[in-house]
Length: 373
Image (cartoon, rainbow, N blue to C red; front, side, top):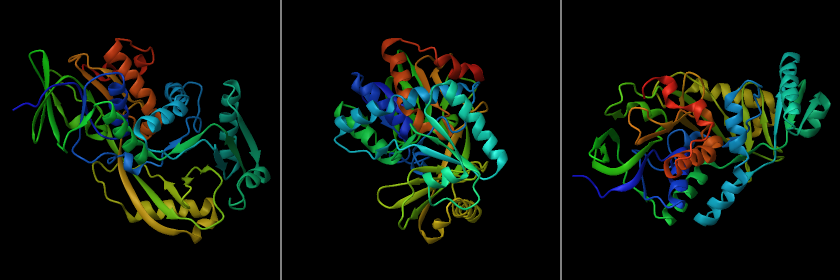
């Protein structure tokens, strides 16, 4: 027996699905969110929330344009979500320091710095002494670094819960945990079959991350090609003095929080749907953190978090309406950029679904690049 209908049903309660639900609800849509897992689980719970589109900047990267545009939305996005939810979300724009450990890595940073100069992005290329002055906890022997001032980080799980609270204040509903198995048409409506029954909607947003490809869609012969990439993230208790900002090396990144903890990430492992933490993953991240900042040897070990990031073959997300079933809108495949791209994804989806406004950016990430989805 089908439930009462909603205008739009969002499948997925991670950062992307909840951002989309909030944006749709605040613009007046009747929205329901359904997921097998609790809010902010999956890849979101294992995200350090780093907002750093320029770390691997290349002139020819279509992902860079998406990420920069989304970063530019973040100040207003956080302020609006905090106001609508009544929840303060930890959010910092203290920059990032990308550290080179040898001359080849420093040469790569010089290339990135030249791209940033052409884009008029504030950054500072540092020699070894200057890099250590910016971050005194760096190991001896670093070759230099690149300071990018407008980068930052956000508490991903807290932001996701705030998005749900804000969406609810605009009338959205969170369906009791249910696994979505199939999406099908029924006359003018769309039925979403779950293991607890069917939900009726006018349209569906498929934002189930890695699990998006496991859902049958009647009329769609090709499933959205996202694959799981396991990411392990360490949570350390840090002793004084603190790191000044997000600090990167080729092998890890470190994110300092106001509560005196540090997140260290992240592995990228082709392990299928295996969500186990592994000795090798923890070992490699601890070694990388201690090599980057020897002070990490004094840290306490809090826990390890594991998430499966939804990757695509071209490293771009899949955002846009299904060509075969236009009532289905994809918002998946964000890989390790889901937190960064959440505000823009929500805006693009809401513009398309509610206003019929198709942003030119959607041409780059359209589902049809993978076939008749």
